[in-house]
Length: 485
Ligand SMILES: Cc1cc2nc3c(=O)[nH]c(=O)nc-3n(C[C@H](O)[C@H](O)[C@H](O)COP(=O)(O)OP(=O)(O)OC[C@H]3O[C@@H](n4cnc5c(N)ncnc54)[C@H](O)[C@@H]3O)c2cc1C
Image (spheres, rainbow, N blue to C red):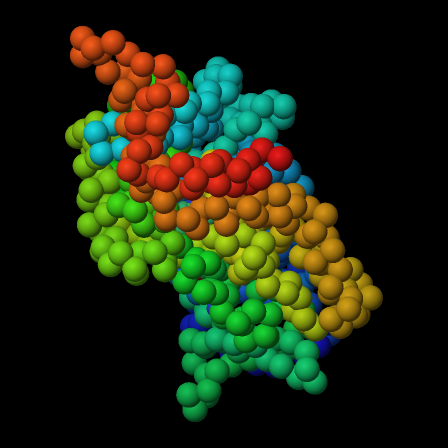
């Protein structure tokens, strides 16, 4: 397949600097029945964790891959909370990944807090200390499944893309895919902006396979008709503030040693808006933020920065930030409706991975997206390489990707927790129940000279006037079905 217009490549990187400046697509044997000399076998759009995994996976199978990234460098436009949960995919792509990747802290402490007006109640999970393993980083493999890693996306995404470039991927930055190139009902490449296109038109780059990893809104998947655009109740707005603090202060305040890290998730801190708050530890910074369903945020009409100010000043958060300096503020959308928003995952000539496919969720206990992005990118590469080897990019051939995804933990977890994800769409979980929990725990610990009652009676007192008993029973059954059986 010819490279229809090589302007962005040929004009000395005007469309963007190729990070591998001077590096050419590797000359290894092409697996592509559909490629032709000088052309690319595949174009991957978006150098986030999904796109880089897909590009890397394809390049390792001998494909010539063009990776397009609209940011000045991979990660330049990306942020997350964030803790990346362990998953095997990146290790399969980069040997020694967990030892080599530029992560900040290995998370061994997870805290879930329910914030009331006057008090907050927390559940703390502490894995066996990782401090003695700080030099080897992620510890032994048996520990890794209990460990997450905090990291900075501008550093991590860039490093990860460099691994892809080292494997032969051609990376073009500051280059936005504007849309798909369609021919005979199949995707045959992408239209790109910023390449100095002629007469105001976009340039095109052709390849028999395109993998859309262009993030939560995925205009490419929409254009291919795989979904009709995500609705406001299916996506959330994440806002994050980054605070500078010394390593010693962080270790002392969170009870950590060495490169151990902690995450703290909060429920009840969003003024009734469906969502939650988080505090994550990096080496010398704290990420503080809120994730809020877009429809709920719009309905309550409270500006996100106001909510952030209140969260930062709240009882459980303020002491963690004493003396810390705000250095950055950013916002990003993320998919939150789980399997209910998963689009069709392929069309003729096209695969979709990562957030673009809605592979991101929270069940209230964990927030996952990075691991799902990498796993789906790896599986897209696997199916893409098979299609290239056979020169078959038809819809039935590429539908094998959906089958791979269904077998993976990604779609299985989204299915397992679909009721939990639905449950998180009930407003009372974010206002009424945090009040109930706080009132109950305040009663449990109150010592005012009067005799105490048993806990069931305290519970009834806490619930009265806040949640009708019938509703409480219905919600208890919902919780059971969502999390327990
Ligand atoms: C506030 C917040 C907190 C989060 N916390 C966590 C967490 O703790 N743990 C976790 O695992 N996940 C978390 N996530 C989710 C996680 O960030 C995503 O699931 C993950 O980044 C998805 O990776 P991706 O590669 O699919 O998409 P992205 O990371 O969004 O990457 C998409 C890439 O495509 C590029 N791009 C987009 N459009 C184009 C185009 N047209 N042309 C060229 N390039 C394009 C973008 O610049 C970007 O580099 C969080 C997200 C947010 C917003």
